[in-house]
Length: 481
Ligand SMILES: *[C@@H]1O[C@H](CO)[C@@H](O)[C@H](O)[C@H]1NC(C)=O
Ligand SMILES: *[C@@H]1O[C@H](CO)[C@@H](O)[C@H](O)[C@H]1NC(C)=O
Image 1 (cartoon, rainbow, N blue to C red):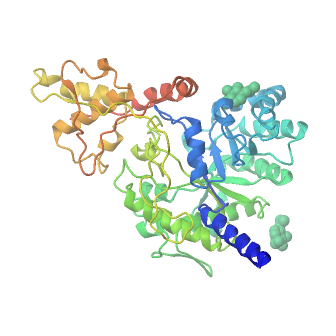
Image 2 (image 1 turned 45 degrees about the vertical axis):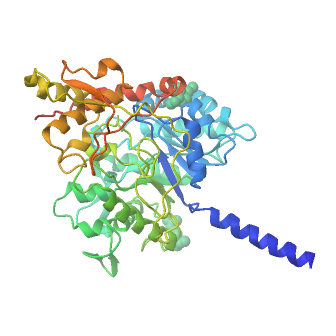
Image 3 (image 1 turned 180 degrees about the horizontal axis):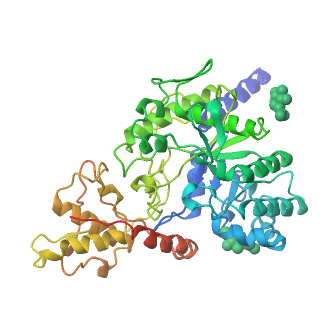
């Protein structure tokens, strides 16, 4: 009897353990930090654990931040920003030092489970105009060589995440897929090198961008529920994600490496800053994606399980908005680690919320708004533009969540954004006497006026660079009343 009980107990335990695991092990997530108020890495790592994410992809390798992943078992893709490619390509010694400080030092017992080093991020984007064309491959080679020499080559692979714009199909049919002419020669070298090293090809695929860049693009083809299929010989494609993925396979075939393993380094849908970016369409996209991933059917050319990293964890209010105002709204969580909409990563279509970040501390519940009786009203336009250039007004743009505010509240939104960005500093709510601090939340049904989170000194120091980049990039935003 005791034996039977023990067996039953063991069975029950296994049941409990498997039902806790909510994220399949082929789904990871991108953790970007281009934000004015980053969550502490301790909180983020707990969030990953609470939600069962076992893989994370980073855009940098800040040893302080990476250290918080030690002992978690979470598989990590470290990142090397594009601006370090030249340095790492110039001299093998630089790559050796990089590996020593950013890999080897984390690998003690119970250390960080590093699996990949991403050398650059989308370095061949057309908008970079070839700036990283010469340095990317040498940097990749140097990093992999340094990994090999440190005895890590079998465990850690160097990769280069590419945007899907490195390949194209003139006919829209996957079978006409080829790499872009200006990158084809270097891509041929890279894919051969990846193959020799047993490293995967990492590609970022964005159906949202396909949809918004081309006004004729059929909306339902961006999602996963059929409609407007593409017929490619005897294969039918029902969504752009799979069609895009297989276009890459044809492009790889063209270079003689049809069997290279492919990881989807980024996939997701933004929730604001564009009329097609909202929580409903994001939920629809993710529901479809998770169903496809759970079915393990893969794509017509590559059946089976697919490895993807969702993009991304949080909204990042200091990202460049050059690609569009949606760029700061890719998070499956809000800036403060609250889930934005229900999603069932297991693909079963349940209406569950992800587990929110724990231990987040907020600034006081107060907001900076336009003083309706202020005298120098003629300065309103100029002051609003000034505030927006130094904060985040992407939610005010056409089709975004705050685009329908009345004129006074629109100004308040801009003032408050600047005030919160500056940690509710008293001086940050003046605007030539036009503004005042209130304790009544000015949010509306669709438009949220944030109060920012408290960031401790260590986090601020470590992420200070992101904030600087923000100011310069948001200067391109002109706000005219
Ligand atoms: C390790 O990575 C960090 C973050 O990117 C970088 O600043 C640092 O220079 C790297 N270390 C070395 C020795 O290259
Ligand atoms: C790719 O894989 C298929 C199926 O395993 C095999 O028949 C083919 O020879 C491989 N091609 C190359 C170029 O390795």
